[in-house]
Image 1 (tube, rainbow, N blue to C red):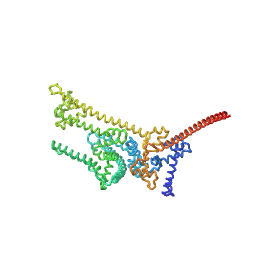
Image 2: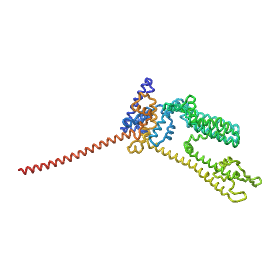
Image 3: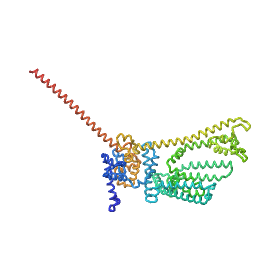
Image 4: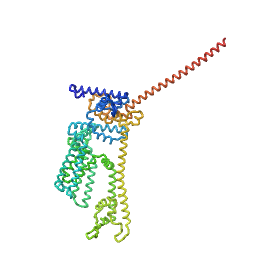
Length: 620
């Protein structure tokens, strides 16, 4: 409120903010001993609040949005509560970024996840800074606040476009002019333009966000490399080893093909440009570690931007709509793949296939190897006439049938191997494309080697390899589900920062949810680092200077581990109670001993009096 008052200078406003911060800090610390204040500072407001306390809860909600709390382990080995004003840019950290971090961070140990949080904090600060600046533009805010509505509308238009294409064509003429009539062509053209505009807006939105973020991250990574050592390695030549090795193998394959067929196939160049062009761009990005020029920097940032999943897919969908879909209208069907980005369940299905890609590639290579082996055996051992297209009986006009003659689909080893994949691997049984296993046409004697061959093909390819693929995908689904359940259980029942568990709080009757969401919220630590970065170092408090020094030195010891303020306070109270109990017990023991000594002294005095009387009697 003070910021909007004209008579106050910027220095006055800062002083007022700091005074409010001090008051809020005092209030937070007093709440530890005051049950009523603890109730008002709860995360969830009670359903029924007295009218005179409504303003207090409103003030608490306001201050909770303006100030945040973390706990720092520092002075004399104790944990201290630190309250700080939340930076303005903190509200610009997307919920999706937080969720992606929580879904990917390694939760095995407290030390590992804290390190990953602090390492990711700089990227989060870059993202918050850029998105905060972009949020000043009304057009950007409209798309940001209604992003999923825009996304759903664009996808609905894509569905209509594909539906229009399906209904408008009677033949395979895939150009726009091949539609049923001019009305159909007009509808397709209009929908394609609308889809292109919708996805184009989303592509511009992501480009506007990603370009400055990637630029900041790239410049920061370059600065870290420069500061890491005196001798800066500008390039990494080792990245080209696999690239040039692949070129040599490709050239050798082309040479073998040319030696056998003697034709200069134009596909050689097409494959080379596509495969080695894209691969070369990726290698070039990794080759340049520190740019020598602005052009290198521009190329590196451009590659990072274009390979960003959100940018790539929206640019691709825009191009698929117009002009590609107007040249080959069936290209528009690929836009329907955007359903993967709209549903978390769809993304999980894709993850189940992409996550075990190494295992799937290994099985795919086994498919290739086994297919080549069986194709070679079938061609060279059983000869090419073993490959046939089955006889088919076709009805004729007079009601009879005629038998279509067998055809040999391959006349070379390569063709027969390809036919083995198409006709044998697909159904899982090579006997579907081979002649009957008899020695000759005039004999019913079986060819036992062919029977063994067919059975081996069925068992190896039709059963084992296909089951391997199914097993890998099913196991990945199960692993993803178990991992998700374990991750949720860890995040719900264990403090991210210190690693303290819910049961430990229950034993001490402490509020675990408040501890997890307020006292040691992981993203409040990111906001605290942001706050330190924006504050003049000369104005640091003692604890802020300590944390800043630890961050500069890569020291994470300032983050509490297996402790918190509430635990230490409970422990101190317990220690005080224990000391009081000990003192009381000792005092009671001393009192009992004093009474016992006093009783024995009185007994001794009585005995001495008796002896004295006996002595007096003897003398008398």
